Length: 196
Image (cartoon, rainbow, N blue to C red):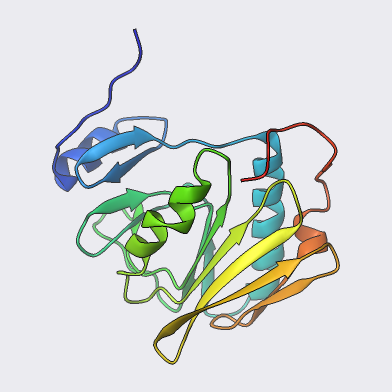
């Protein structure tokens, strides 16, 4: 018999339930589902991304968070765990547990086959309800590519970096993403599914 997860529950009940678990779960409009899409390649890219950004932002007013930190949208429609988040300035949390961030400036997701459409679509739309949210980067796993969405003149703009020699600038925190560093341990010839 498969595992079942809570449905039609309140954000408060979700948080109480989630904080009693070791595994991570997403809350979306009352329903709870397990976080998915983690592979060895995903983990390699995640670690490289964190290291590169932490090195660049050390000593600045920005803070880099891992996927262990949950984020909440203002209407509590979504609680989830992005792969990487960056706050420019002081971090704000939902409550005294300091495990649910309210004000990310940059969110980075590493695409997986299971979640790519959601990350590009509904999840991005929900993230856009966060007032502090300014930039979104989607990192591909199976080819060196980053899709970058950023706020400019109150409009969302899009750019893309492709290839190991490419770089991408995160404007709001003044950081450079060098694809060669993000993918330095990735063997693109190893079979880990197909490109989302």
